[in-house]
Image (cartoon, rainbow, N blue to C red):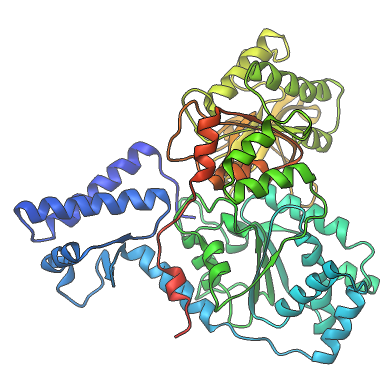
Length: 545
């Protein structure tokens, strides 16, 4: 992901780029005004996650009259067919499509492969047959996608995939397991350790399954203060097989840099939910790959370990059946999903009382992270009424009024925090969650504890942390890659363009046991009716000519 900038510096950079392009355009009068309008439209599209904008015939003619389109050298703007790009995004799309289209079928000993499939999927029911068919396809491809909602058995398939790869190779394999965030990496590591026990293979194969899941940034070699990485085309990652979890969170830039840093021999499997929110940054890579006929993309539909009522609500949201989704939330006979309107702040505060009670009971740090996963509040807006900021401040004030938070300062015992910036020196990254606790080994000095993918706890002084925020409430985007026993989704009082069916679907599917929704009927139903349609050219570029 490219280096983060704050809102003010981002606006200044937009202004500077726009006026640089205007100054070099050679246009005057009405043409110059129309050209600036196009540039502003493109910059706004990038902020929405699009990689380009569509052009009409008059707009194309206008661009061709400018100095930026009358030469052969590379320019900051690219017009391709009827689309206008900044060169960077056009270049990323082309490089990524070119790399993916180079992947081909992978030669296997068919007798050995299908013998293993029979052993790993001995049951002849329809579900086992579907899973077996998915792995049969994936194991015979150099690049593939496994998509499915929560509880559809993606991780179980990944573990079987790893074991079968090791058996088929009959040699030591260099396997890398990655996820976009530290929390997603921790979840995948736990799931792999749970699922490899009982696999129908030798113990040496079970032990050979990788013990560590890392973040994409760590794998690439994050460089402080730079959008570049240690590993790239000139210094590729030494890896035979790369499995990428929570792939819906990966933006175009990061995916391109990751694939570019792989050798031609590295096989790639992406795992995720194509119906979730796309990345915060530009592009919708997983959705584009899943829709491409040139990529082997398999979808899992059968749900195994997921509350059936939550699953039913998620399906209604995903199918944009807004009225039925609202009716389900209002049905008192349905216990797992409910709509809440009054006293939701008191309800939230009571939920977090349980977390602070666990601290008072001197639970271990690992147990506290488990307790923190009992409940979370998800919002769509960062600021304003019913926002992340408002709920975090409201919860802190109520906890102080109830003498649960005893320190008057910013840092207090039990403060959960979400990291917003990467820090390679400290080894913490955007999306990592920590808990502020007294360290008994440092005279009860307050330290922020982070759970590592290998089960270790990293402790860092609060003053050394990069940009972070209190995490009683998170944005839906920041919750991706996480799972909670209970989720409360709080929507704003009036509709805004952030609200889409993907936002609601992603929030609902973060919950394992219980969902509460705080929303006006019109706001929720309008959100469910709106589907994100990011504009870009990757799908077209992935088509085989």
